[in-house]
Amino acid sequence: MPNVAEVIRDHVTLAIECVDRLYLNAYVPGLQRGPGVVAFLRQRGQVIASPTLFGEITNAFKAALQGLCSTRAIPWIEFTKGQDKDKLVETHRQQFTADEGVVLVGVAQEKAKAWAATKKIDGRRVHFTFNWHTVYVNHYYIYLIDRDWGPAFIKVCGYAPWAVKVCLNAHEWAKRQAQRRGLSCEALDNGFLACADPAALQAICDSLSADDIQDFFDRWVGSLPLPLTSDDAASGFAYRLSILQMEVSLTQVFDDPVRGREFFEEVIRDNLDLGRPDRIQLLVDRKVLANTPSQFSTRVITDGILPSLHVEYKRCHIKQYFKRGRALRTETTFNNTYDFRIGRGLSNFAHLRTLGRRINWRLLHLERTAHDCGLSQAKLSALTAPSRTAQGQPAPALKLGDPRVTALLGALCLFVLTPEGITNRRLRPLVAQLLGVPEVEYTARQMGYDLRRLKRKGLIQPVGRKLCYMLTPQGRRVALFLTKVHARILRPGLQALDLRITSEAPPPLRTAYAALDTAIQQLTREAKLAA
Image (cartoon, rainbow, N blue to C red; front, side):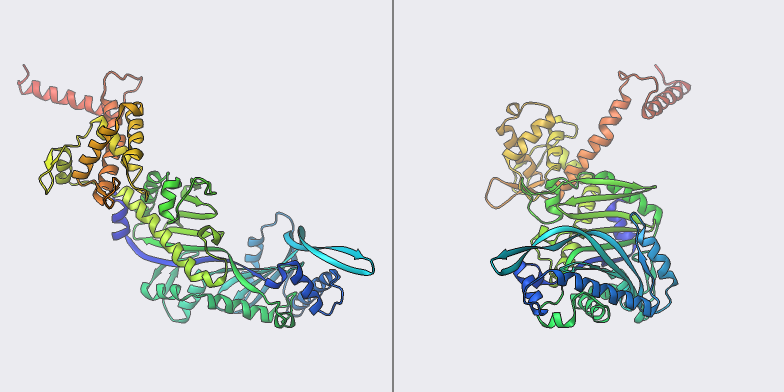
């Protein structure tokens, strides 16, 4: 089977980077603090900022929304607990024939963060203070079809401060843009399977901007009844969009689906430690400290026969799976932009998209590095035999099978993906642990000797003038290749051939070699060459 690098280079027929799902929050900045709530109520004409106006606004909004549904024959559905909303909505979408419009309105009672008022009487003066509380109130799901975005929904909280959520899919946006431009594309569920002009399709995906998202919101806010009116917006109480969740995807379609799936399963086996802190910090390009809040986990989830790889960093989720048996899908999902010290404002959309793409490609690069690590015969010979550097310095051999060399290369694998440098102090306890000896028995002087021969063999290089080193590209390949050969071939193979290890059923390898020995002996006897 070709390795990861070869499959990605030679067997991918289409590679498209695109923002996938967008989950946005529309909030009113002036209603996020108590004094702002008081100012809002007073601009509505109240001398005393009483919360009774909240209920009046909510009732007026509900009546207007029901009136819209009645006038346009839009289904009004009260969702029940545990009901599959997506399945119900999809049935109505399939029956919807217009190019654009509201498909249905659904009502569900859900938890929300809302304002609660406390009445205070000070002599003849009555006033209210407002504090945040968690409440269960009605939320109104407005499912719609948009001419630019396709299926989407807007969810409105039924109580102050009347937060709005918006769910969009940028793949659907790209599909409609391609269709308008006459670009022939074949869909792959939520993505693309083939395209007559991949460069033009990628340009469409790249052209999506924060202005396109804002335009969608402004058009529907202007056409739908909402709790807050245009007069409220003119008084400084207008909605502002922020990013709650954003998925950035890379879809790579293979020419041979079977080969692609085998490749992906091999990648999973080699990358179960991607969630380790030392590998995460290279993947997301963020320094991980001892107090960084994150699970740092790698999970492999199997749905039927299709596995998927999941890596978590704080609330960022990196997922890789084989989509519909045809394409490798790599996704980075930002659930909290502050994990990367980026604000939630819609103005950061382009920055997040670039960051998500970088993470996706870093993941693929790490997988290629771990999997494509073979050595040529010449390089293997130069490594395992004594040699000299270009400056004439002796470079002692790194003998394959030597326990100390095996432990040394195994310890180097732990530095393959970490930005931290290799020092005597950092490497020595790891080598000692792999050798199975106390740290005092593998001395700093021995470690210094090993670092020198690693340097002279070209496996590590110094960082500046400090006694600190980094693995070279050749060093990464050597450490990974020889460690894998020892762990996966030599050790289990030699154990299988050891006749001192008995069991009820001998290993297949031992059985095969026993048959080979018998056949050679028989051939020798028949040739009358046996002593």
